[in-house]
Length: 552
Image (cartoon, rainbow, N blue to C red; front, side, top):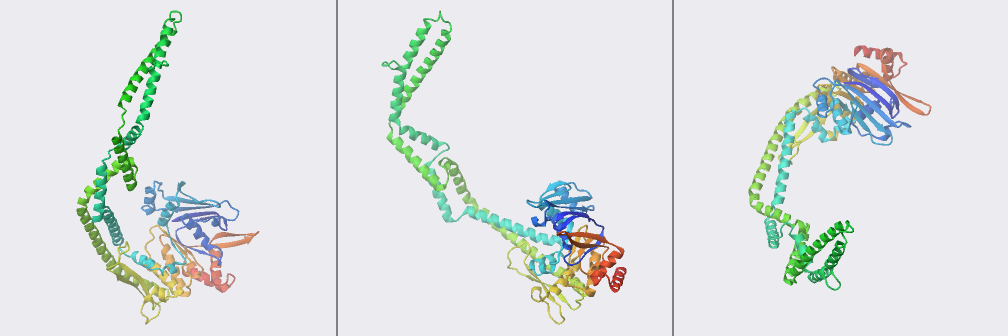
């Protein structure tokens, strides 16, 4: 139940704070007074797309707040628990729309996304717009109306079966792509044979590169070894070993006069030992260096082949061993694909059969629900002044239809407003006024207990009048019984049926236009109803308005 609505700097509303009670509330006012602005503000709090044009001229931001009372066991409480938001008997929604940025939203003071606001809003409020009859022309909307009268389990079973079929079909397609054709198998086996012949193990490619650099530079390496050995232990000029020996001997002779020489001599001796070890290593390296043209050619051939295959398979040469292992595993799996494919095809066939059976169950449920709903709509149409109207739900089952979560039926509303004329597709024959009444009749016929959902009707009574308007008022009064309903209306017959009435007034002055909302009671309500009937100053209209209130 909507308890309060606070609006600040929203379109042409400076500041507005409203409180609401249970029951049916009519929102009235002159044409163009801004009655639907209240609905627009509430829609923003329910997650509608925001626009900076909604911010009042000269304001930095629009600020909207609504408080909803949530009864126990209401779906909104479960949703709040699932979102880790504290579920209390009262929930506060707030949305701020800046003039130069993205909007922000809060639930009970905690920041939330607009998507979360929209999800909660769908559980709290149900809006029937003034263009509902235009949406009724959409076949999908007609099917939706009918499916709301079908057992939810039947509808969900078809959707689940369609989802299962889609999943099994996708799995089969992926398996078929992996298995490939006979030609694919031959190609894979040929590629595996190429990699087998190369026989490149993990870490082989860097080692081959190192071998290639070494074998291609043997002569240069040999020269470097010889020159280094001469520098270490040569005679002319003396090498490093001879020079370190001479330095140590000279310092040792004077160590008794300069004790600090002992530590220096020790370092020189250590350096000499390292130089001797380096000389031995150089000797061994130099002796191991030999020209091997055949080995060099073999290394370069393997490097070239590895590079070619890596380019062919679009991997780095170092990744070839891992790719080789994956390819071998895939080829080995080819033998098992036959059984896997057969099992996958059986799953697809079973899923299709399950969906087909569920679609037939849905077809039967739709036909049964369609007959019952059409009867209630005919009764509602009679109450709205169309006693001769005929309506039925054309439901055609297509056994060859593609798998869909909506089943295999083509659903279409067939309608006739005149006696003796067989019902025809709604989109071809109904006028605007007839569509408006039919839309109302369907809302009446399909109405379910609100169960804590606030119902808002935005000028759905457009195009009706007279005794029909009284029927609309009775329906809206019923919609608010034990719950809460709002209706933006121009009809006195509807407003008179309301438990509460609010008047929207537009005031112009000082270069700006602003909107105010006034709760009505007593004489003020009679005056507003008289205005809606023709003239607030007419005694006849005022007596008529008072009589309507008394009758209501």
